[in-house]
Image (cartoon, rainbow, N blue to C red; front, top):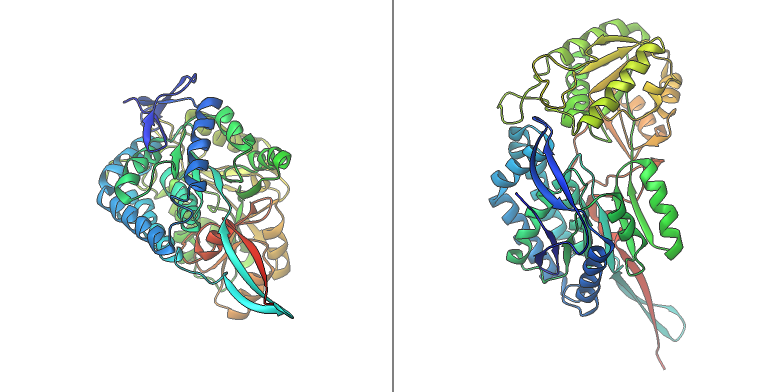
Length: 480
């Protein structure tokens, strides 16, 4: 199937751009083509968004009107969930049952309904007399045209995480999906008019790095939101400095799981293994580093290995599949390269470490557990973005905390203990945007999601996300 850009309410051909082949990662077969967006394409989309912003067809709608359109979009995504799930599964390799029953699509619908309600939250706007003889009004206004760059690991969900708060705030958007996974965003574009969004409010331009660079450089884009790698985030910050754009960055992660001697190891193994293989480990909040108090280390390692060996790797449309393929051959080689270098550095591959038998046609990787890795080694410090867990011992709470914080990233962490005081201490001292206690990876639309350190800044989800797309204006009126 051949897709087009979605610009100013219509699907349009590229102006001077080429084509990109889209593959099914479970079979490595081509399933579609999309345009490689040119600078001319990006400019058309930005101008459409700019016109839609300044003529007031979205930014000047009442909160109630914006809310109603978002509620309608949520209903349409729910109604078309099976179709969107099929396309998303074919494009990403995600298990279809997980997508449609309890994963990305139900959560996307919930996110949209949350932001539909958040559109009517006016807590930041107020009036008062703060200087003698003057009345002040504080207005919370939309930033303007926003460029949004979504990742390949959660194409639909991350598009919703970006569109929901931006639209609730009154911004207009040019969305660039990841080059390998644009299809669900283009399906979403088909639903916008039915939901009541005027032309130009949301535009979708497909393409690779050059398309994204053109979007970030465009002088009429007031803010750029990226979910991606830390390296890409640094490039966007540097580029955005030329026009002093706002930047909103959700970047890499290397989540620790701290397991104390009073923890339930059956719970630990179930939660850590699921959080390691969910979405084939291609998740910035995935469980990656399990640290266990030394007295329970051997038992915990055995339990985690057993759980990882029990993961059902399979084709996306098989009902019992727990884990599908990596997104691409390049990503599979990247993950296997990390494992090979860990082995060469002296770490022990306890289970997995290769390609599962019978899955040569796609981009599959075995669920993998690695022990005996040094704290400063690459496999501990760097983001693998695959179904790989390291398991290491620690001695005492202070060392557990030091190991947990000892990475460049700060997106998510978890603590397994029955000691409430310890849980509260560590939740305060761990330098991560989300800290789970006796669980790992659940999220809620009401809870802010974002990182510390080189995991970026700005929040997805929650009313905080809406605030990131707004700016406060002070209007001061002389009473005389």
